[in-house]
Length: 286
Image 1: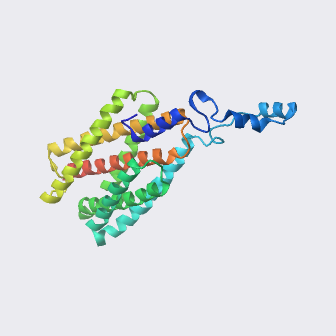
Image 2: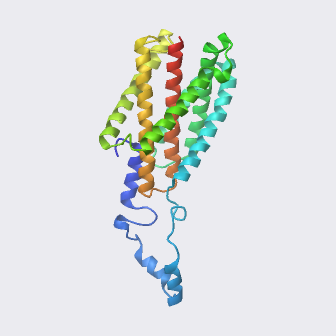
Image 3: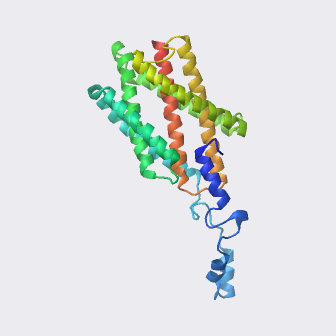
């Protein structure tokens, strides 16, 4: 899967073999396996044969529980440091989200191109991501809610969180029921669109900083709203790709360590979706 760095790495290892097995499921060291049973009595061999087959947990292969637990752990880190970013934002302003942005851009590239999975880097990414999201959220809340004395649980941030969770649940249901099918063509189209939008987002960020328009190209007019709707649709489609990558990694018998990378990808997509929804709500209110 050249279009998906995470699954490309998993698929490459599946061709080499997991858990001591090579292509075709044959043991990579058959002589060692025979040596281990040499000297056993017929009863011992029978008892060994009657034992239940090792499951994914025993062979340290990826399970859905692994991905769920890692995702919840990374989500908790984002929330904790999001609260920190929220508290520091009024004092340090743009400095907090600037540090967070530089951190996630730098670490994101390292994680994507690093040949081995580094859990500390993934955890550090979640920290910077939380700082960035917290600072941005506080800025939106200050601009749109505090001026009108809107309670925080009814404000723009709460609405964005609720909308994000609703989209996530809807996409998961659509994927599991087969309403959305992730084909190779679908994956290629979404991946190319994401790359194109990432380039546009960087250009838009520079434009926003230079022009002083916080929403960048399109502002809060119809063009800006259209851009936000497109980005939300793209992030939603990316969720389907994340779900499919998780299912395929489990089916391929990927090592348990890939749960960190898959959880990281899912959190990144969720945060992106949240930020795009937050921006859309801001444009509509503005």
